[in-house]
Length: 194
View (tube, one colour):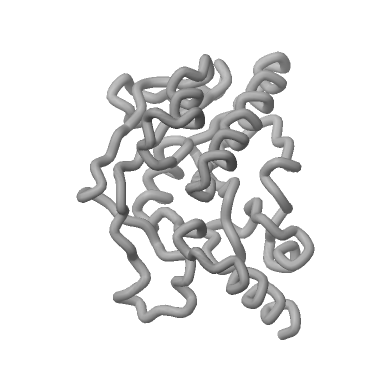
C-alpha cells in the first residue's frame, strides 16, 4: 500500500494530467497488430497498457513494471510505441534518442521500430525532425482533432464515461525503423501498416 500511495502522490503532484494522456485500446491494438508494438516508451503505472514500459519515475514505478526513463533505455531490437508528454523539448529529445538507437541497431542489422504519436505542431523542431528523419518509413498519418481522443492521465480517478478526452489538436503518427524492421513490419505509403 505504501508503494501505491507513493505512485499516486508522485503523479498527483505533477498535475497537468493531459501530459499523461494515453492512446485508447483500439490505438494500441492497431499498433500491436500492424507493427508488433508491445512496449510503451512513455507511460505510468496508472495508464500503462503493457506489463513493462518506461516511465518518468523509476524509483516508485519499478515495483509496477517500469524499466525507468526512456532516455536511459537502450533497446537494440523490438517495436515500441512512443507517445511522449506533449512538451516540445521532451518530444524533440525523444525523437533524437530514438534516432540514436536506430543508428546503433542499423549498424548491427537489428529490427528496431518506433511508432511516434505526437501533436501536429508542424512548425516546431520535434515535428520537423520527426518527419524529416532518415529513419521514417511510409508517409505520416495525420489525424484531425475532431476524429480522435486520448485516455485521460487521471483515468484512475474518473468514472468510465469520463476517462476519454477529445484531442485539442490534430495528431501525427510517424514510424521510424531500421532497414530490418522495415522488412519485418512494413509501412505502406499512406501511413498505415500492412
